Image (tube, rainbow, N blue to C red; front, side):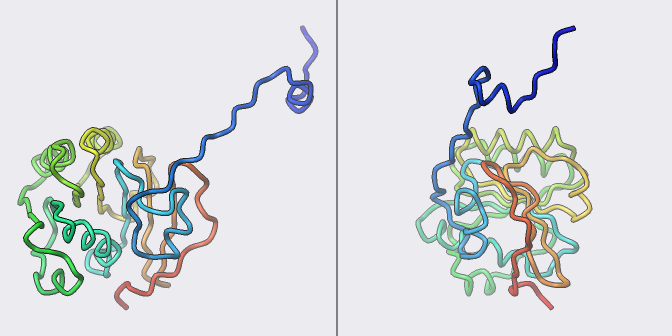
Length: 206
């Protein structure tokens, strides 16, 4: 049996090639929150990708995390689609947040139909962003959403229960939203290490 050689020795002797990870270019899709942008490798939402937003309950103010981006997109004349929201969106709140309601569409669906609609909207190439609330999905279904976002060059946002953080996911970015204290935790981010400390987020409901 050959002698065991330490990896460090091989690297020092240049007998093993060590690749350097290529830095991702800055995102053209800032989140609208300076502290969150600073914590992400691309200083914004991952483009053409799926972002998972893991929440402890509906109605804690989670939509406020997306409103700056959705406002910017709709005011630029780009389409945003909500697929199977758990509650009927309150138009005045969205209007106050700066969202152009003329560019906002809602798809009513349930179960597998909602997942199919989310995938088709992401893949269509006609939507700047798709926000969905998939139920009881596995990593295979999430991978389809991720691939669809890449194909359609869209921002995908999936709100899921916080308990889903125990399972792996192909999403490019995973954020956990905590209520007590109100904060964001970056669980996974493509292109870099997740920051070790939570990010305060006082926009959540008390």
